[in-house]
Length: 120
Image (cartoon, rainbow, N blue to C red; front, top):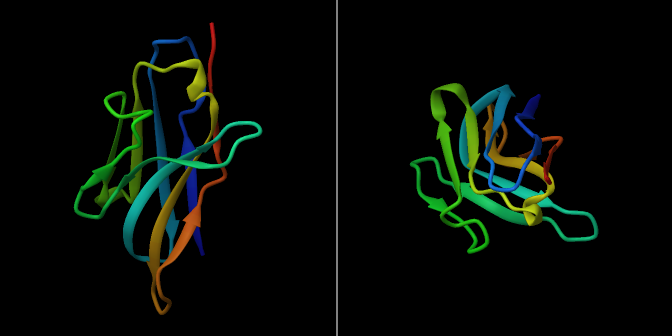
Protein backbone atom coordinates (compact mmCIF):
# COMPACT_ATOMS: atom_id res chain seq x y z
CA UNK A 1 0.00 0.00 0.00
CA UNK A 2 2.90 2.37 0.71
CA UNK A 3 6.13 2.59 -1.23
CA UNK A 4 9.29 4.60 -0.69
CA UNK A 5 11.37 4.97 -3.83
CA UNK A 6 14.89 6.40 -3.61
CA UNK A 7 16.93 7.90 -6.42
CA UNK A 8 20.08 9.91 -6.93
CA UNK A 9 22.84 7.55 -5.88
CA UNK A 10 25.94 6.91 -7.94
CA UNK A 11 29.69 7.24 -8.18
CA UNK A 12 31.31 10.53 -7.18
CA UNK A 13 34.86 11.68 -6.53
CA UNK A 14 36.01 12.71 -3.05
CA UNK A 15 34.90 16.25 -2.35
CA UNK A 16 31.97 15.95 -4.72
CA UNK A 17 28.24 16.25 -4.12
CA UNK A 18 25.13 14.16 -4.61
CA UNK A 19 21.46 14.71 -3.85
CA UNK A 20 19.31 11.76 -2.89
CA UNK A 21 15.53 11.81 -3.18
CA UNK A 22 12.92 9.57 -1.62
CA UNK A 23 9.29 9.77 -2.69
CA UNK A 24 6.49 8.14 -0.74
CA UNK A 25 3.36 6.98 -2.53
CA UNK A 26 0.25 4.97 -1.80
CA UNK A 27 -2.60 5.22 0.66
CA UNK A 28 -0.96 7.92 2.78
CA UNK A 29 -2.85 9.89 5.39
CA UNK A 30 0.07 11.58 7.14
CA UNK A 31 3.87 11.32 7.15
CA UNK A 32 5.66 11.96 10.41
CA UNK A 33 9.43 11.86 10.83
CA UNK A 34 11.56 10.96 7.82
CA UNK A 35 15.18 9.95 7.77
CA UNK A 36 18.14 8.65 5.88
CA UNK A 37 20.27 5.73 7.02
CA UNK A 38 23.28 4.04 5.50
CA UNK A 39 24.94 0.67 5.70
CA UNK A 40 28.48 -0.03 4.57
CA UNK A 41 29.72 -3.59 3.98
CA UNK A 42 30.38 -5.35 7.27
CA UNK A 43 28.91 -2.51 9.32
CA UNK A 44 25.63 -1.85 11.07
CA UNK A 45 23.04 0.43 9.58
CA UNK A 46 23.43 3.94 11.01
CA UNK A 47 21.38 7.11 11.04
CA UNK A 48 22.62 9.82 8.68
CA UNK A 49 19.94 12.46 9.10
CA UNK A 50 16.39 12.83 10.30
CA UNK A 51 13.70 15.49 10.00
CA UNK A 52 10.39 15.93 11.76
CA UNK A 53 7.18 16.92 10.07
CA UNK A 54 7.74 20.54 11.07
CA UNK A 55 11.35 20.60 9.92
CA UNK A 56 13.51 19.95 12.99
CA UNK A 57 16.66 18.12 11.92
CA UNK A 58 19.23 15.87 13.53
CA UNK A 59 22.65 14.71 12.27
CA UNK A 60 25.47 12.62 13.71
CA UNK A 61 28.84 14.34 14.04
CA UNK A 62 30.23 12.35 11.10
CA UNK A 63 28.08 14.24 8.57
CA UNK A 64 27.20 17.46 10.39
CA UNK A 65 28.05 20.48 8.26
CA UNK A 66 28.31 18.39 5.08
CA UNK A 67 24.87 16.80 4.71
CA UNK A 68 21.50 18.55 4.72
CA UNK A 69 18.11 16.87 4.95
CA UNK A 70 14.96 18.64 3.83
CA UNK A 71 11.47 17.63 2.83
CA UNK A 72 8.58 18.74 0.66
CA UNK A 73 5.41 17.71 2.45
CA UNK A 74 3.25 18.56 -0.57
CA UNK A 75 5.20 16.01 -2.63
CA UNK A 76 5.67 13.45 0.17
CA UNK A 77 9.38 13.58 -0.59
CA UNK A 78 12.52 13.81 1.50
CA UNK A 79 15.92 14.82 0.17
CA UNK A 80 19.50 14.44 1.33
CA UNK A 81 22.01 16.92 -0.04
CA UNK A 82 25.51 15.53 0.44
CA UNK A 83 28.50 17.83 -0.02
CA UNK A 84 32.16 17.26 0.68
CA UNK A 85 31.79 13.53 0.21
CA UNK A 86 34.49 11.27 1.59
CA UNK A 87 35.37 7.64 0.78
CA UNK A 88 34.02 6.65 4.19
CA UNK A 89 30.57 7.87 3.08
CA UNK A 90 30.42 4.94 0.67
CA UNK A 91 27.40 2.81 1.57
CA UNK A 92 23.89 1.85 0.58
CA UNK A 93 21.61 4.67 1.63
CA UNK A 94 18.06 3.95 2.77
CA UNK A 95 15.21 6.31 3.47
CA UNK A 96 12.67 5.68 6.17
CA UNK A 97 9.41 7.35 7.09
CA UNK A 98 6.77 7.03 9.75
CA UNK A 99 3.56 6.88 7.75
CA UNK A 100 -0.03 6.71 8.87
CA UNK A 101 -2.35 5.19 6.31
CA UNK A 102 -6.11 5.62 6.27
CA UNK A 103 -7.58 3.25 8.83
CA UNK A 104 -4.27 2.09 10.32
CA UNK A 105 -1.76 3.43 12.86
CA UNK A 106 1.61 4.85 11.88
CA UNK A 107 4.28 2.38 10.76
CA UNK A 108 7.93 2.73 9.77
CA UNK A 109 8.41 2.11 6.06
CA UNK A 110 11.75 1.66 4.28
CA UNK A 111 12.98 2.21 0.77
CA UNK A 112 14.95 -0.33 -1.23
CA UNK A 113 18.25 1.52 -0.90
CA UNK A 114 20.51 3.36 -3.32
CA UNK A 115 24.27 2.89 -3.65
CA UNK A 116 26.59 5.81 -3.05
CA UNK A 117 30.24 5.24 -3.91
CA UNK A 118 32.90 7.87 -3.23
CA UNK A 119 36.11 7.05 -5.02
CA UNK A 120 38.72 8.58 -7.26
